[in-house]
Structures are given as C-alpha cells and as structure tokens.
Image 1 (spheres, one colour):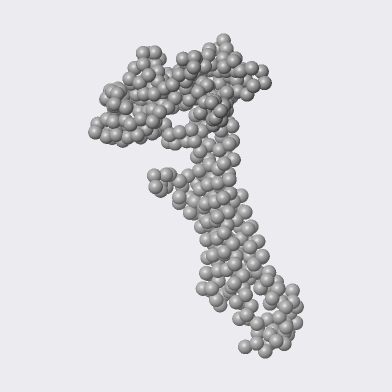
Image 2: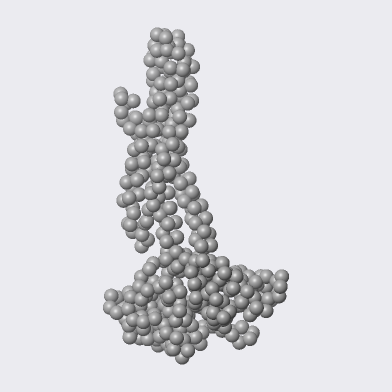
Length: 403
C-alpha cells in the first residue's frame, strides 16, 4: 500500500464517495422529513380535519373528498358548544382556481373561501392589514387577504392594503397580507388568497346540496387542547351522523382525521423516501467494494513471488490470509472514516442552501454515520476474502518460480 500510493488512494476514493453519498443523501432526506413535520405541527397540535368521505352517487364510486356532504350549517353546528363541548372553533373552507390581476401583473392562484376564524384556527399571522371579518362574510363583501408571494408578485415590496385587484373580472379590495410561512403538505398559504366564504360561493363559484345548503370542501376543527382530541373527534362524528341522518350500521359520508395522524402518515411516506435515497447511495458504496476486490486481486498477482518467499520461510496459510484481509480492511475502514468526514461536511455545506427555488434542510444523524462506517468495513471484508483466500492457497514452489 505504501509503495503503490496512487493505486491505494484511488481505491480509497471509491469508498469515500460511497460513504459520503449515503450520509449526505440520507441527511437531506431526513431534513426534508423534519421540515414537513415541523410545518404541519406549526398549524397546531389540537387540529382536526373534516372532509367529505367516499360515497356512491349515480352508480359511480367517488374518491375521498369528492362528495358534496359537508355544509356551512355543519360548520355552524360544530362551533356550538351545546352540541360539541370539546370543540373550540370550526372554520369551513372551500377553494377555487382564479386569475388575479392587479397593477399590470397577473397570477393564477387558489382563492380560499373562509370565515373569520380560519386564520386563528390554522395559526396564520398577518403581515399587514386585517383579517376577513364576520361582517364581510355576512354581507358577502368583495375583500381579499393576499398570501405573501402573491402580494410580492402583484405589488412588489410595497404594502397593497387598500389597493384594488380583480378576481375573475370582479373588483376586490385588499384588506390584508399574510405573513410568509412557506409550503406544507396542506398547501402553501404564500401562494393563496383568502376571501369571505359567502363571497366565494356567490361571486366566484359554489354548489348547493339537494336541500339548498352551501357545500364546503372541508372543515378545520380546533379542539380545546390536545387532551380533548379524542373527545372532539367523537363529538364531531356523532353530530355529523345525526345531521346527515346516517342510520346505525351505515358508513359515514365524511372523514375525520387529526393532525397527529397526518404527521404519522407523512412520516411513513417520507421514511420510505429516505430509505430509497440511502439505497441509491449504497450502490456507489458497493461499487467501491468491487474496486477493493479488483485491486486486491491485482496485488495477489503482482506479489505471487513474495507470497512464495513467506511460505518458504515458515508463514502459514492463515498468516497470508490475515495479511491480505488486513490490507482490504484498512482500505475500506480508512475510506469509511474519510467518507464520514466528507459526508458530514457536505451535509453541513448544503444546509440552508437553495437550489431551483427550493431550500435544503439537512438533519445529521450519528446512527447513519456509524451504519455507513460499519457497512464500509463489512464490504471491505466481504470483497477482500476471495483475494485473500486465493493468495493463501498458492503453492509455495509455484509461487517461488513466478516471475
């Protein structure tokens, strides 16, 4: 190894790249997982989501959320402590795609029809202006609260409060701007606008049930605190079954999920993604192990005469076997240690950096580093065994005659 420094260095490089890839990619994956979890939990840990459930209408089975079974009346009933004492607030919402035009600029966005409680329930903050108010909902006012990115697109850095905008050709007045929070699995508030839910229904879009009620796409329910989540879920389910006249034994036409269930589901999904990234990076580590095997086989061929001399002066097969196994292990462990350092450095370098408009967040984990180091050592042993056994089985007389 000392004589063939370049060859040993290139062999080390294969292991270094493999280990560094495993650590850096898994750090990026876990960072993304942590980022998603934090953004969802920032909405509040006492939040329930009520969505229309699967239903069969007209002989066609509809997917979750496609049935028109939730109404404004349901949301009002859930807000009444007489019916649901564990519920603090219920904020219905509906959404529709709109073209928003102002100041010579335009953008396509989602207009969320909401009530005055929506901002508080979803834990949003205002950067300027005011929230959608109850009188706005009652009077179907044409007012709008802009997401931070939409505001920047239309008005640049100036405050747009009081400025007119047009949604589907209708004139709305900007009354507030949301503080930036970024995207989450539940949507990106920076790229959305809020309007009174009655205005969204009567001015932008909407549909009624057979009974004439205004339908909503979901209801955000805020329990009194985390300890009331189970009780709130039960009360919501019971009340909606009564209001929807669902007979005992029949399936619900709605679905109630909690924030924690959403986090757990996303964690399961992202964990698969992290493992997939690690498996891809592991391929480069496997290639590095094959490089070790290749170099060790070359070394055995070049040092055949040396092996013969050692055997002639009394070295046993296990001594030759141990010598070549030690060299392979040194290459893999040395490359593993350098790879751990390179992987940690690369993960720290990427943390907070932006690429293609997306910001990287990495989460270093000691267990990943230890695992990558152990795997690199194991690969060195595995791919070093065959060359070592081959060297130990050389006939001493034949080896001494080798040129």
